[in-house]
Length: 472
Image (cartoon, rainbow, N blue to C red; front, top):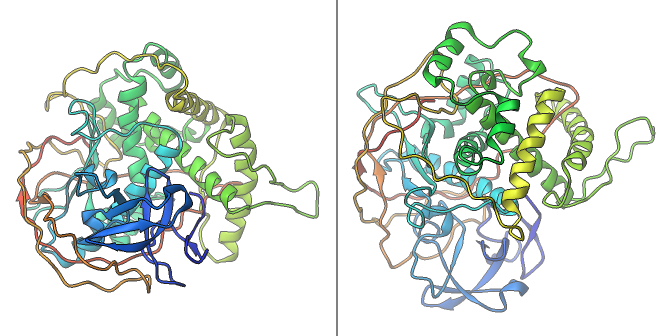
């Protein structure tokens, strides 16, 4: 994530901010520019961008910005859309009848937008289900039901489902501790699940990549159900750290890919942030790790990324320990893991290079039958739930609400969008959680602090049933 500044007063702002704390200008993210812009009111729900690259263009707030206060993206004023590109990808939101669900929804959307920023920086296509009904990406944010059924976090042919309980910090930490995980974040869930998605898009049916993939990760055609049962019965093999990024990656080649993909996303995101902020390591002792290279991550070779990663993580872990905190990057990168990360890098670089014709992948098969083994994200220990049917969306009407408090003192977007947006809110079904285990390392660290909170508001929507989700 790069640095951003208010275009009115040059004050440093964050990617999640909606108002400048110095001059109180409205802020919003303009995906066409990949920039946060300050805006001035142009009347009739329109806002004029003060960003030099926008040349005075007019924008509107995303409906979920103006009305729901869970977004900060902007839409061109002449666009027929009421939702921004990011919010269009969310197919189901939590039932907002529960007050805490709005906060969870906000946190989920915030993590999702960070993921989308990184994918865009790497040149990876993100198509919605509306643009590509067969291969588009969509998200559902669901909660466990009162009848005891549990929500599965996972991926199914482009549909990514997340249990909103993962947005509850206390719950997520409890699960992390109980499962012996050193690391568990919302952003990590999104990275992992999109790893499954891009495997199907870029590797699974592509003759250029599938055989090299199998040599590194194993044969993905191995029975997933059997692998899942064996993993929760026997655990990870001894000395798994010598070949895998996490214990969960040992479960099946699909999971090894998804864990490795997520880790590559983490590396480039942290390095991009460090580079944008001008982070450098200039120790007095020349034998200690140094860092002066500021090559943009999208232009860097894999070897360049790795050369910079180890000094940075050493310093960041040391800083965390000085704060009395656990290592921010509790992973070891054995040589086989680095080889897998290099493969992910090659796939992403080719997919993101728009100047070269991309080798066409064979169109994927139709959706996997519910009875077939399902690719998962990370499953709760020993928990595998049957897939559940999903019905079509129903349109709900947004109800105006009173603003809720903001953790950022200047993050209350003014006004409401006059158009009531179609939104789907969850009823209940499905089944749960997530796991991966890794070992701590003093030599590596990553600063993945949760971004600052902004305001959350209230609105009521109804429920609809859902479609099949993958095991997790």
